Image (tube, rainbow, N blue to C red; front, side, top):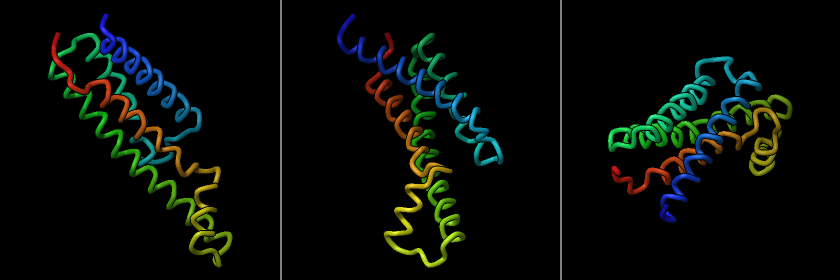
Length: 139
């Protein structure tokens, strides 16, 4: 096994464990109150399927499907950052309408529910998946 193959294998394990763990965490947190909250759960399921499909059948088509799913992870993560931050800002302004500027920003980022930066894990997983498929060539 070449060093590149070892790195790819490690990235694959990290990706599948990360997607599975994140899905379990979101389910335990009941992150399914509305349609928007279902997006990461659906993407995580699609990601696991795409990764396993690509690992079992490494073709250009399965690599493309995995890449496309990982790009959707990055986009969903960015959208999630926005939604979490916006929800925190709204809550902070309800509790203290005088907040503004840096004070509001810090309160929103430090909030526990929803954690403002938690959707960043989707971005991270998407980047790991993209690294895994980087310069993929059929065997």
